[in-house]
Length: 262
Image 1 (cartoon, rainbow, N blue to C red):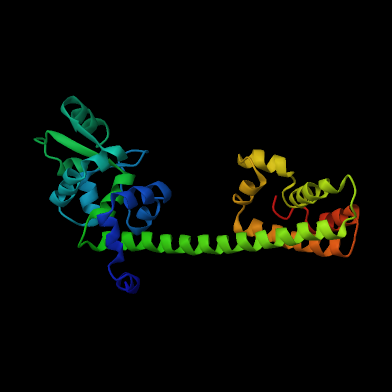
Image 2: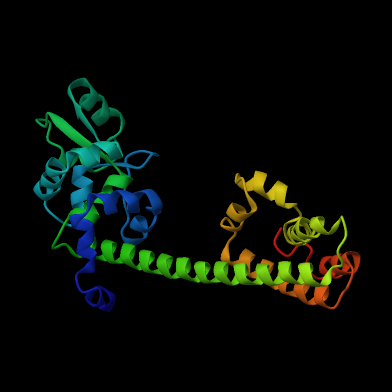
């Protein structure tokens, strides 16, 4: 509860922004909803009724209906369906058997709204003055804050890697004797580093990660991978400076790093 107070109302940004709701729903796992409260789904694809949504948030059915009415397009995009007539009769007979839902659904009900698990989370982003919804929004904020910290940490490591890469290419330019084969030293050392860490050449890695250039390839590496690459490039820089041969450097790297990541 302390965390909720510390958020100081920031969680209400979800209630105000459809764009933020959609972006979050596209990038978050909904599994945490079950950990907060048990959800008795009606089918294997985890659909629920508006009655169950109201129970989950401990609010009135009218509150849920009003949210849906005001934001119908969002819920329809999530896969909401409205059953009536024969479809409703079959649903009651085939799906609701064995659950306590029929007791809450009057035989006089002419239509029934069925929502997805995605919609259950969307309601939690929208409803205000509700303890469960506030817990959910604060949970999402905490995820976003952690993600932002992780992104910054990755970006720093990426920049460090760029610096170390330049140091390595400068060492190659300065300490490897000039020859008609020197131009191959740069891609050869790059491939050597990738081979000992990933067991793939730069070309194979680009194909594996579906990118076109080595620069784009670097952007696909995780922070751990970037850190290891930087470490190996630092070693290569030092060994090249001390004028070890390519074969000697290859043997030392293979002995130390092979299968570090793969």
